[in-house]
Amino acid sequence: MDVSNPQGSWFDGKVVALAGGVGGAKLAHGLAQLLPPEQLSIIVNTGDDFEHLGLMICPDIDTVLYNLAEVNHPVQGWGRANESFRVLEEAQRLGHDPWFLLGDKDIALHLLRRSMLDAGLSLTEVTRNLARRLGVWHPVLPMSDQPVRTVIITPEGEMPFQEYFVRRRTKPTMLGMRLAGLHAARASKSVQEALQAADGIILCPSNPFVSIGPILSLPGVREWITSKPTIAVSPIIGGQALKGPAAKMMKEQGMAVSALGVAQYYADLIEGFVLDEADSSLAAEVKRLGITPFVTDSIMRNKSERRRLATKVLQFLKQLTGAIEV
Ligand code: FO1
Image (tube, rainbow, N blue to C red; front, side, top):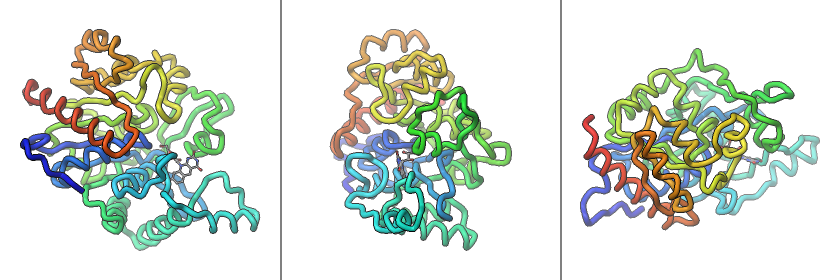
Protein backbone atom coordinates (compact mmCIF):
# COMPACT_ATOMS: atom_id res chain seq x y z
CA MET A 1 0.00 0.00 0.00
CA ASP A 2 1.47 3.35 -1.04
CA VAL A 3 1.53 5.70 1.92
CA SER A 4 4.18 8.04 0.54
CA ASN A 5 3.45 11.74 0.67
CA PRO A 6 6.21 13.75 -0.91
CA GLN A 7 4.68 17.10 0.06
CA GLY A 8 4.90 16.31 3.77
CA SER A 9 2.56 14.58 6.16
CA TRP A 10 -1.09 14.30 5.17
CA PHE A 11 -1.82 14.98 8.81
CA ASP A 12 0.47 15.86 11.69
CA GLY A 13 -0.45 13.40 14.40
CA LYS A 14 -2.82 10.56 15.01
CA VAL A 15 -6.22 10.14 13.42
CA VAL A 16 -9.07 8.01 14.70
CA ALA A 17 -11.90 7.12 12.33
CA LEU A 18 -15.25 5.81 13.59
CA ALA A 19 -16.88 3.47 11.09
CA GLY A 20 -19.62 0.95 10.47
CA GLY A 21 -21.10 -0.40 7.25
CA VAL A 22 -19.91 -0.02 3.69
CA GLY A 23 -19.59 3.81 3.49
CA GLY A 24 -17.42 3.86 6.59
CA ALA A 25 -15.23 1.04 5.31
CA LYS A 26 -14.69 2.85 2.00
CA LEU A 27 -13.42 6.01 3.66
CA ALA A 28 -11.34 3.96 6.11
CA HIS A 29 -9.72 2.32 3.07
CA GLY A 30 -9.04 5.75 1.58
CA LEU A 31 -7.45 6.94 4.82
CA ALA A 32 -5.38 3.76 5.08
CA GLN A 33 -3.94 4.52 1.63
CA LEU A 34 -2.59 7.80 3.01
CA LEU A 35 -1.68 7.24 6.65
CA PRO A 36 0.62 4.57 8.09
CA PRO A 37 -0.71 2.23 10.82
CA GLU A 38 0.93 4.33 13.58
CA GLN A 39 -1.17 7.32 12.49
CA LEU A 40 -4.58 5.77 11.86
CA SER A 41 -6.87 3.65 14.03
CA ILE A 42 -10.35 2.63 12.99
CA ILE A 43 -12.95 2.10 15.70
CA VAL A 44 -15.73 -0.15 14.44
CA ASN A 45 -19.33 -0.66 15.49
CA THR A 46 -20.15 -4.07 16.96
CA GLY A 47 -23.86 -3.42 17.51
CA ASP A 48 -24.66 -5.39 14.32
CA ASP A 49 -22.83 -8.51 15.55
CA PHE A 50 -24.81 -11.68 16.12
CA GLU A 51 -24.50 -15.42 16.64
CA HIS A 52 -25.60 -17.43 13.62
CA LEU A 53 -25.11 -21.15 12.97
CA GLY A 54 -22.79 -21.23 15.98
CA LEU A 55 -20.57 -18.55 14.44
CA MET A 56 -19.93 -15.02 15.64
CA ILE A 57 -20.71 -12.72 12.74
CA CYS A 58 -19.21 -9.23 13.00
CA PRO A 59 -20.38 -7.58 9.76
CA ASP A 60 -18.91 -4.12 10.31
CA ILE A 61 -15.52 -5.39 11.48
CA ASP A 62 -15.34 -7.77 8.53
CA THR A 63 -16.43 -5.11 6.05
CA VAL A 64 -13.59 -2.87 7.24
CA LEU A 65 -11.08 -5.75 7.21
CA TYR A 66 -12.08 -6.94 3.74
CA ASN A 67 -11.99 -3.41 2.33
CA LEU A 68 -8.59 -2.63 3.83
CA ALA A 69 -7.30 -5.96 2.53
CA GLU A 70 -8.94 -5.17 -0.84
CA VAL A 71 -10.73 -8.52 -0.95
CA ASN A 72 -14.28 -7.15 -0.49
CA HIS A 73 -17.13 -7.84 -2.87
CA PRO A 74 -16.86 -5.02 -5.43
CA VAL A 75 -20.60 -4.30 -5.75
CA GLN A 76 -22.28 -5.05 -2.43
CA GLY A 77 -19.29 -3.81 -0.39
CA TRP A 78 -19.68 -6.43 2.35
CA GLY A 79 -18.56 -10.04 2.03
CA ARG A 80 -15.79 -11.32 -0.23
CA ALA A 81 -14.99 -10.92 -3.92
CA ASN A 82 -15.00 -14.16 -5.97
CA GLU A 83 -17.07 -15.88 -3.31
CA SER A 84 -18.77 -19.28 -3.52
CA PHE A 85 -21.69 -20.55 -1.44
CA ARG A 86 -21.14 -24.31 -1.30
CA VAL A 87 -21.58 -24.54 2.48
CA LEU A 88 -24.78 -22.49 2.51
CA GLU A 89 -26.20 -24.44 -0.47
CA GLU A 90 -25.64 -27.71 1.33
CA ALA A 91 -27.04 -26.29 4.59
CA GLN A 92 -30.14 -25.25 2.62
CA ARG A 93 -30.41 -28.74 1.11
CA LEU A 94 -30.40 -30.02 4.69
CA GLY A 95 -33.26 -27.71 5.64
CA HIS A 96 -31.56 -24.50 6.77
CA ASP A 97 -33.23 -21.21 5.76
CA PRO A 98 -30.41 -19.26 4.09
CA TRP A 99 -31.78 -15.79 4.88
CA PHE A 100 -28.32 -14.53 5.85
CA LEU A 101 -25.82 -15.05 3.04
CA LEU A 102 -22.55 -16.48 4.27
CA GLY A 103 -20.01 -17.31 1.59
CA ASP A 104 -17.41 -20.05 1.90
CA LYS A 105 -14.42 -17.72 2.30
CA ASP A 106 -16.35 -15.64 4.80
CA ILE A 107 -17.23 -18.80 6.76
CA ALA A 108 -13.52 -19.68 6.91
CA LEU A 109 -12.89 -16.39 8.72
CA HIS A 110 -15.86 -17.00 11.03
CA LEU A 111 -14.53 -20.44 11.93
CA LEU A 112 -11.18 -18.94 12.90
CA ARG A 113 -12.90 -16.21 14.91
CA ARG A 114 -15.04 -18.82 16.67
CA SER A 115 -12.06 -20.94 17.62
CA MET A 116 -10.09 -17.96 18.94
CA LEU A 117 -13.05 -16.64 20.94
CA ASP A 118 -13.59 -20.14 22.35
CA ALA A 119 -9.91 -20.24 23.33
CA GLY A 120 -10.56 -17.16 25.46
CA LEU A 121 -9.16 -14.34 23.30
CA SER A 122 -11.01 -11.03 23.41
CA LEU A 123 -12.74 -9.71 20.29
CA THR A 124 -10.00 -7.06 20.07
CA GLU A 125 -7.28 -9.74 20.10
CA VAL A 126 -9.16 -11.92 17.63
CA THR A 127 -9.69 -8.99 15.24
CA ARG A 128 -6.01 -8.08 15.38
CA ASN A 129 -5.11 -11.69 14.61
CA LEU A 130 -7.55 -11.89 11.68
CA ALA A 131 -6.33 -8.54 10.36
CA ARG A 132 -2.74 -9.81 10.24
CA ARG A 133 -3.84 -12.97 8.41
CA LEU A 134 -5.48 -10.72 5.80
CA GLY A 135 -2.40 -8.49 5.57
CA VAL A 136 -4.05 -5.55 7.32
CA TRP A 137 -1.70 -3.59 9.61
CA HIS A 138 -3.84 -0.64 10.59
CA PRO A 139 -5.49 -1.08 14.01
CA VAL A 140 -9.09 -2.14 13.41
CA LEU A 141 -10.62 -1.85 16.86
CA PRO A 142 -13.98 -3.34 17.85
CA MET A 143 -15.69 -0.66 19.93
CA SER A 144 -16.02 -2.98 22.93
CA ASP A 145 -15.04 -6.47 24.05
CA GLN A 146 -18.38 -6.85 25.78
CA PRO A 147 -21.42 -7.67 23.63
CA VAL A 148 -23.59 -4.67 22.75
CA ARG A 149 -26.44 -5.58 20.44
CA THR A 150 -28.59 -3.14 18.48
CA VAL A 151 -32.29 -3.87 18.80
CA ILE A 152 -34.73 -2.04 16.51
CA ILE A 153 -38.09 -1.06 17.97
CA THR A 154 -40.87 -1.45 15.39
CA PRO A 155 -44.70 -1.48 15.49
CA GLU A 156 -44.39 -5.30 15.40
CA GLY A 157 -42.19 -5.30 18.48
CA GLU A 158 -38.44 -5.43 19.01
CA MET A 159 -36.17 -7.00 16.40
CA PRO A 160 -32.48 -7.93 16.64
CA PHE A 161 -30.61 -5.78 14.12
CA GLN A 162 -29.89 -8.40 11.43
CA GLU A 163 -33.45 -9.69 11.69
CA TYR A 164 -34.64 -6.16 10.86
CA PHE A 165 -31.87 -5.32 8.37
CA VAL A 166 -31.42 -8.49 6.36
CA ARG A 167 -34.38 -10.80 6.97
CA ARG A 168 -36.98 -8.00 6.92
CA ARG A 169 -34.97 -5.76 4.51
CA THR A 170 -35.55 -2.72 6.82
CA LYS A 171 -39.26 -2.76 5.85
CA PRO A 172 -40.77 -2.29 9.34
CA THR A 173 -40.96 1.29 10.57
CA MET A 174 -38.17 2.10 12.99
CA LEU A 175 -39.77 3.68 16.04
CA GLY A 176 -36.49 3.72 17.93
CA MET A 177 -33.60 1.51 18.93
CA ARG A 178 -31.92 0.27 22.07
CA LEU A 179 -28.56 -1.27 22.77
CA ALA A 180 -28.85 -4.53 24.67
CA GLY A 181 -25.87 -5.11 26.97
CA LEU A 182 -24.77 -1.47 27.02
CA HIS A 183 -25.07 -1.24 30.83
CA ALA A 184 -22.29 -3.85 31.22
CA ALA A 185 -20.08 -2.63 28.36
CA ARG A 186 -17.20 -0.20 28.11
CA ALA A 187 -15.00 0.98 25.29
CA SER A 188 -12.13 -1.47 24.94
CA LYS A 189 -8.72 -0.48 26.35
CA SER A 190 -7.37 -0.09 22.80
CA VAL A 191 -10.29 2.18 21.88
CA GLN A 192 -9.76 4.30 24.99
CA GLU A 193 -6.04 4.61 24.26
CA ALA A 194 -6.64 5.48 20.60
CA LEU A 195 -9.17 8.18 21.48
CA GLN A 196 -6.91 9.63 24.17
CA ALA A 197 -3.96 9.77 21.77
CA ALA A 198 -5.99 11.16 18.84
CA ASP A 199 -5.14 14.54 17.38
CA GLY A 200 -8.18 14.46 15.13
CA ILE A 201 -11.31 12.34 14.82
CA ILE A 202 -13.34 11.50 11.72
CA LEU A 203 -16.91 10.23 11.81
CA CYS A 204 -17.05 8.28 8.55
CA PRO A 205 -20.07 8.43 6.19
CA SER A 206 -21.83 5.66 8.09
CA ASN A 207 -25.38 5.43 9.38
CA PRO A 208 -25.48 7.93 12.30
CA PHE A 209 -27.95 5.83 14.32
CA VAL A 210 -27.02 2.19 13.92
CA SER A 211 -23.34 2.46 12.89
CA ILE A 212 -21.88 5.48 14.72
CA GLY A 213 -24.58 5.68 17.45
CA PRO A 214 -23.55 2.51 19.33
CA ILE A 215 -19.89 3.65 19.48
CA LEU A 216 -20.96 7.06 20.83
CA SER A 217 -23.16 5.38 23.46
CA LEU A 218 -20.25 3.75 25.28
CA PRO A 219 -19.33 5.53 28.51
CA GLY A 220 -16.69 8.22 28.01
CA VAL A 221 -16.61 8.14 24.19
CA ARG A 222 -18.63 11.33 23.65
CA GLU A 223 -16.46 13.16 26.19
CA TRP A 224 -13.21 12.07 24.47
CA ILE A 225 -14.60 13.08 21.10
CA THR A 226 -15.82 16.50 22.22
CA SER A 227 -12.36 17.21 23.65
CA LYS A 228 -10.71 16.65 20.21
CA PRO A 229 -11.03 18.28 16.79
CA THR A 230 -13.72 16.20 15.11
CA ILE A 231 -15.28 16.21 11.67
CA ALA A 232 -18.07 14.13 10.16
CA VAL A 233 -18.60 13.14 6.55
CA SER A 234 -22.26 13.13 5.51
CA PRO A 235 -23.70 9.72 4.58
CA ILE A 236 -26.66 11.58 3.06
CA ILE A 237 -26.27 13.11 -0.40
CA GLY A 238 -29.10 14.98 -2.10
CA GLY A 239 -31.55 13.77 0.57
CA GLN A 240 -30.68 10.11 0.01
CA ALA A 241 -28.36 7.55 1.55
CA LEU A 242 -25.96 6.13 -1.03
CA LYS A 243 -26.47 2.74 0.60
CA GLY A 244 -28.56 1.39 3.43
CA PRO A 245 -31.54 2.69 5.38
CA ALA A 246 -30.12 5.92 6.92
CA ALA A 247 -32.54 8.20 5.02
CA LYS A 248 -35.55 6.01 5.86
CA MET A 249 -34.52 5.91 9.52
CA MET A 250 -34.06 9.70 9.67
CA LYS A 251 -37.53 10.22 8.22
CA GLU A 252 -39.05 7.77 10.68
CA GLN A 253 -37.26 9.54 13.55
CA GLY A 254 -38.86 12.83 12.45
CA MET A 255 -35.55 14.34 11.36
CA ALA A 256 -34.79 16.43 8.28
CA VAL A 257 -33.65 13.90 5.65
CA SER A 258 -30.65 15.84 4.43
CA ALA A 259 -26.98 16.39 5.10
CA LEU A 260 -28.12 19.28 7.32
CA GLY A 261 -30.13 16.82 9.44
CA VAL A 262 -26.93 14.78 9.95
CA ALA A 263 -24.97 17.92 10.89
CA GLN A 264 -27.68 18.83 13.41
CA TYR A 265 -27.56 15.30 14.85
CA TYR A 266 -23.77 15.54 15.39
CA ALA A 267 -23.81 19.27 16.29
CA ASP A 268 -22.47 18.90 19.84
CA LEU A 269 -19.60 16.64 18.71
CA ILE A 270 -18.13 18.16 15.56
CA GLU A 271 -16.32 21.29 14.49
CA GLY A 272 -16.32 20.43 10.78
CA PHE A 273 -18.75 18.76 8.37
CA VAL A 274 -18.09 17.41 4.88
CA LEU A 275 -20.98 17.75 2.43
CA ASP A 276 -21.24 16.62 -1.14
CA GLU A 277 -21.27 19.16 -3.98
CA ALA A 278 -24.92 18.25 -4.56
CA ASP A 279 -25.64 19.75 -1.12
CA SER A 280 -23.54 22.91 -1.42
CA SER A 281 -26.67 25.02 -0.84
CA LEU A 282 -26.81 23.64 2.74
CA ALA A 283 -23.32 24.89 3.64
CA ALA A 284 -24.56 28.24 4.95
CA GLU A 285 -27.04 26.52 7.28
CA VAL A 286 -24.32 24.18 8.55
CA LYS A 287 -22.25 27.28 9.32
CA ARG A 288 -25.17 28.74 11.27
CA LEU A 289 -24.93 25.69 13.57
CA GLY A 290 -21.41 26.82 14.45
CA ILE A 291 -19.89 24.03 12.32
CA THR A 292 -17.39 24.70 9.53
CA PRO A 293 -18.70 23.22 6.26
CA PHE A 294 -16.48 21.71 3.58
CA VAL A 295 -17.98 20.91 0.18
CA THR A 296 -16.43 18.29 -2.09
CA ASP A 297 -17.33 15.36 -4.34
CA SER A 298 -17.88 12.75 -1.62
CA ILE A 299 -18.94 9.75 -3.73
CA MET A 300 -16.36 6.93 -3.64
CA ARG A 301 -16.84 4.82 -6.79
CA ASN A 302 -13.41 3.20 -6.79
CA LYS A 303 -10.11 2.93 -4.94
CA SER A 304 -8.71 6.21 -6.24
CA GLU A 305 -11.90 8.09 -5.32
CA ARG A 306 -11.63 6.71 -1.78
CA ARG A 307 -8.10 8.06 -1.64
CA ARG A 308 -9.19 11.37 -3.14
CA LEU A 309 -11.95 11.91 -0.56
CA ALA A 310 -9.60 10.84 2.25
CA THR A 311 -7.05 13.41 1.06
CA LYS A 312 -9.68 16.17 1.13
CA VAL A 313 -10.94 15.07 4.53
CA LEU A 314 -7.44 15.05 6.02
CA GLN A 315 -6.65 18.48 4.54
CA PHE A 316 -9.86 19.79 6.09
CA LEU A 317 -9.08 18.18 9.45
CA LYS A 318 -5.55 19.58 9.36
CA GLN A 319 -6.88 23.06 8.60
CA LEU A 320 -9.39 22.79 11.48
CA THR A 321 -6.89 21.45 14.02
CA GLY A 322 -4.65 24.40 13.16
CA ALA A 323 -7.55 26.71 14.00
CA ILE A 324 -8.72 24.91 17.15
CA GLU A 325 -6.86 25.11 20.44
CA VAL A 326 -6.98 21.65 22.02
N1 FO1 B 1 -26.40 -7.90 4.12
C1 FO1 B 1 -27.51 -8.25 3.44
O1 FO1 B 1 -28.27 -7.35 3.04
N2 FO1 B 1 -27.82 -9.56 3.22
C2 FO1 B 1 -27.02 -10.57 3.65
O2 FO1 B 1 -27.34 -11.74 3.43
C3 FO1 B 1 -25.81 -10.22 4.33
C4 FO1 B 1 -24.89 -11.19 4.74
C5 FO1 B 1 -23.69 -10.79 5.35
C6 FO1 B 1 -22.74 -11.73 5.72
C7 FO1 B 1 -21.56 -11.33 6.31
C8 FO1 B 1 -21.30 -9.98 6.53
O3 FO1 B 1 -20.16 -9.60 7.10
C9 FO1 B 1 -22.24 -9.03 6.17
C10 FO1 B 1 -23.45 -9.42 5.58
N3 FO1 B 1 -24.40 -8.49 5.20
C11 FO1 B 1 -25.54 -8.85 4.55
C12 FO1 B 1 -24.20 -7.07 5.46
C13 FO1 B 1 -24.53 -6.68 6.87
O4 FO1 B 1 -25.51 -7.39 7.48
C14 FO1 B 1 -24.84 -5.19 6.93
O5 FO1 B 1 -24.19 -4.49 5.93
C15 FO1 B 1 -24.37 -4.53 8.15
O6 FO1 B 1 -24.71 -5.16 9.31
C16 FO1 B 1 -24.82 -3.07 8.17
O7 FO1 B 1 -23.75 -2.30 8.46
